[in-house]
Image (cartoon, rainbow, N blue to C red; front, top):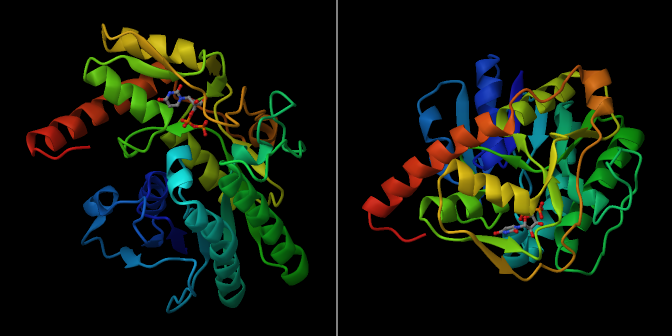
Length: 319
Ligand code: UDP
């Protein structure tokens, strides 16, 4: 296949590019680099099956030649990022998705939308199944991301129903691994950075809120299977191993021998109290389940961050 990955220089986008290339596809990565980085795709430079286009998908997208699939992954994705980039977040989920769908229609390509567990908001159904409609505050600070992704899902289903575009929707739950931005504000990079520097870990609220963390290779495998499947309606991909943020902080302090302890900070507005995917559908329809345990995934991730921090700090660059 010839595949376009929007957000291809981002954390997930770049790992998807790697997987697609390993499966012998031709890949075009598109990114405006507001939260992505060319560092994530630098190792692909010179690969004749890979091309990078610096472009903002909220503007009309032009691609020369055939296209078989579009993976629409462009969007700020950390709460800090979408608080700083609220309009861009709304635009990429709405206008960007519209442009990507128009391109899919013109090329006869399949489109897979990166949606999110945030469509469930602060969920009142636990664990979250795909048929739950969610509990979202449309005007809160997270609303720009949640509503953009909900709109994007609606747009994808409309193009599927009205124009017969082949579409897939993945609802991605918390994912971690190498290439997360060290200062993107999410809990995994924050805790690892703080622990590696011997600082206290900043736990928001009392740390009783829960999350379930999926290692990036598992997530990419689920997405690849979904792309090749016939499943049109949204599919959760994530790891159902749920834990409190306080337990997560304690385990990172233990793994890294960090004497820094915990520093409690205020809970952000509308922070979901619990989150865990019900992955029955992915298991039955895609034959997928996560394979990487948290210990193993964290070991890889901490090693990557340690390397990144030492390179950055020895170059005298601040984070
Ligand atoms: N969090 C925290 N300390 C941090 C960063 C995040 O306690 O330094 C909490 C945050 O309040 C949330 C959870 O960790 O409950 C996950 O936050 P993240 O920003 O990674 O993503 P979210 O799952 O909220 O989209």
